[in-house]
Length: 265
Image (cartoon, rainbow, N blue to C red; front, side, top):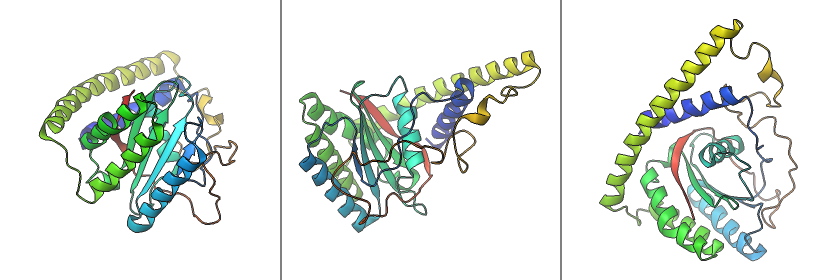
């Protein structure tokens, strides 16, 4: 699994070099654990989730963020949710214990993104099970709060050892992971072959025209991914009724490695 995640990150980096710039920008880091940009939750529902997530962080130090977007704007759900979690620094910096539950309303996409420090208990297979058995059925019935609240409860139960995966789901996940690994290897080989041919044809090397020098990403980011600098969107609170005075925000973790799962409804 570690090899597959490393290849996934390599593929994402290659796609960034190939495409030059992402279409959808990352919003400014919020002062809330719940960010509902689509307005799917009532104020009372947002506040209820916010209190539960802050209480969980206080007792375990693990940070769970919920983000509901109106649209991916033609972005890939895996790619964008990973960048969002990385840029916001969800999780404690010295523990890498962040989790992002990401929802794209228009595309009906669901992603659970896990930081390296939580993957010992919240495996990819368990993340997939939460999506399929808890979030997806509730969302299909239009019960967004119930789906998200249930997902948070599942994660808390998993951390406490009270939620187990069945053998069938684990076995199926292993087969899918192997097939994905083969696909990724092929895509990485194709992308680097393409870049090599382009470099040879231009004589100056890919990016020799300075195309990537003025994309607005601030210092401190990875070579392939921005690490949270340079995003200057409006930082107004659209997630709930909590301000920034009583909470220090996300911990600045950068340990996301492509772990988690996805689905739709």
